[in-house]
Amino acid sequence: ARAVAADKPDLVTAVDSERHALHQEARACSKLEIVHSEHSKGPNLLEGKEAAPQCASQLVYFVRPNNPPPLDYPYRSFTLSNLTLALGRPTLADRLFSRSLALDAVLVLAGAAFVAVLAQVTIPLEPVPITGQTLAVLLVGVTLGATRGGLALLVYAVLGLIGLPVYAPQDNGTHLTGLAALASPSYGFVIGFIFAAILTGWLAQKQWDRKAVRALLAFFAGSVVPFAFGLPWLAAWLGNAGYANDLQSVLTAGFYPFIIGGVVKAVVGAAIIYLAWVAVRSSDRRKAAKPLGE
Image (cartoon, rainbow, N blue to C red; front, side, top):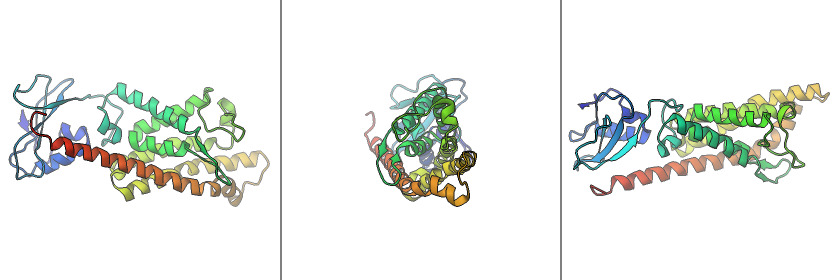
């Protein structure tokens, strides 16, 4: 193994940004180093402790091939994969699960299912009820990141087109699917959900979800995206149906009634994701404080 130069990237940074932060901290400490060696498939990240009371952190990280470390060295092993859909910096999902193509596929399907479930949740408010659909879209994007979040919402859109009742229900409780859904005045919003997830996922990869104010801004930004697709779609539908489709008519039908609900869902979503990161960081501190060998 050899020490990683302070200005060079290493495999630790590919695991999660929390460990990357520890790497930055460790660079200034002479008793800590981050090492790695040439590897092929399935390298292990070995996390251990080393006495360094003058440093804020006592963690030292190693990346080695599959051969085990010395038996007397305490460690926890993390399996890494060279193939993943999780491009860019890690998100909350990467902080909770290891990266692999198989797990990425599971997370994409789980994200689509999560949106489908919350789309059925309705809070009756006047003049327009609030559904959980947009909240789920934003949470999926922030949690999974741009690539997996966008794919999850693409899967969600396709599931509705092939006949599954995954979209938000109509006023009478029925579900539009297939071509009927595609021809509806609101399908532009479904298309916009894909790009909303991509945007919020990209912002999460920029670590906007770690701070309360930035998390709120990310959710507000994601909330606006569906309207960029939904309102032109609605305007075209109104014109084809013989209704007024001037700007004021379109905004009255497809924007103004959803402002309050959008604000509420952005605040709730930002609070959920911020508190999740608070819990993750708290767990990390407890693990780092454990005595050797535990």
